[in-house]
Length: 141
Image (cartoon, rainbow, N blue to C red):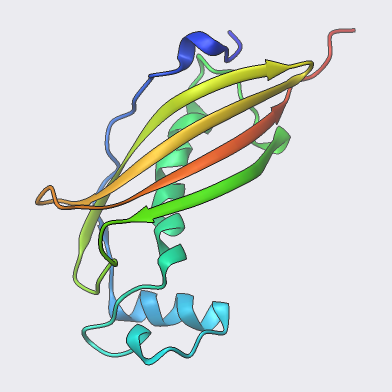
């Protein structure tokens, strides 16, 4: 099967909890070259884009769903937005729940809009990461 508009609305089970640690936050900030002191120490908050690390775990459900027929080698990440309710903090245990919001086909390209809600294991919603993926299908010979 190939992904199409009928897949909009499909949701996937939450990921296993991700433990946000001060060390992971510091490593991420260092990789960004951001020396903001808020990203250091035992009570560190994460840079806003740290949410993509956790959202990426949920995207695996798209790539591995046999009903969609997606091939990761044919995917381009076209857009990313993260709407925060609060920062991720050292000590948070976070799950990520993926939903396909919209699918459009233009020629041999599928445009897939998805959202991933990040919430603590206690149910406190932290943010929503919205993404657009472009999937280039193989043309029939």
